[in-house]
Image 1 (cartoon, helix red, strand yellow):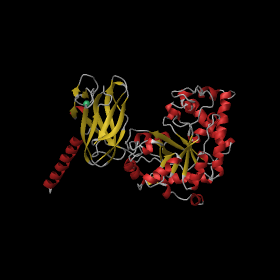
Image 2: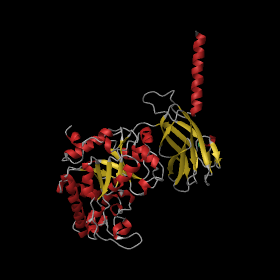
Image 3: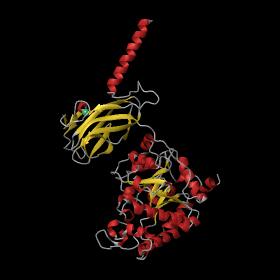
Length: 487
Ligand code: CA
């Protein structure tokens, strides 16, 4: 009996040591973890990994273990870690590094598949990257660092189980007078959170192509108030986007509008990228949003009001026709390439508030769900004027990754209380990866032209997989709006 107990204890001890050795445990381990402890984490030293075209050094101070790996200066240079995890699932991967020659980027591969780019902020001393969420299989996995921009040193990698983000989506709209149609649409989107992603396609004219080649129609169609901008109408543009949106609504679809807002004045109108019809681009106009927003008596401010009022008339037609609108003005503000984002966050946020207040309270537009489209907290206009946050994604062609870091940045931006949408995309994320990563984008909306039909951003096979996935909602699967509203 005593002998058996001793053997059992010895076996347990050996197992524990083996477990620790396998994971190169540095701090708390799964074996010693108890409620309240920090989650386990496992460190793998770079100097013990497989080196390709790189070498071990120990001259810079402050590294972990016996040294670090340096000499990432040629394409093909690589560092491969063989790691083991106890269960399949999501892990946070952190890289210990130094980058003495400014900000650099490396390319990551997990189990020989591309896993995106990791930014290494400039640092003379050894430091760590932000965590990268990584899906690993049970047991052995490989994690490979490819040189990318090169000229950095890698000290170690660290893995820990990824905790789900906290938060609960609030089923409410910032406009207290929202129409029953807008409320019904929001309720439906909240209901679908985590269960499905709605398919979307920019530009109504793409629907026949989708029907013919993919065999399904999207749940959402993206429209654009671009040609309703007064500085374009003055030059002869005509738009039937509002009429098409009403038609789409009557077909049972969901409507989203963006507004490529041609600057109210100051169009440079020169060939080579500054033509009047490119007047929403910063480079094509002299219009100064900071001046306009800080001078309410100026002509510039009055022209902003004129333009908002022109769009209000279109939105009123939609409201009168019972159409709720996922409304996304001032998109990609933080990019700076559109005039409304050209002078930094403050005028952009002030303009957003002006839009919200004028459309909601002056024009009585209650059919709008307000979709903000920048990630950075310093650009965020505030919880009281935003219903949904979003990101526009144009990855390399054929990159069907789940965009988990952008998704989680947006979840953090709103403390998990608002929906997060992929409001424009080139390549559509793979539905299987969206579920595996818990990247619960509310909808996607593929941009028009080659992004849909060119075959490289999205292969036809991929489009068919997406549109026929059980995780993807298409037009034929949407509920009837009259039923939703009487629920
Ligand atoms: Ca090291």
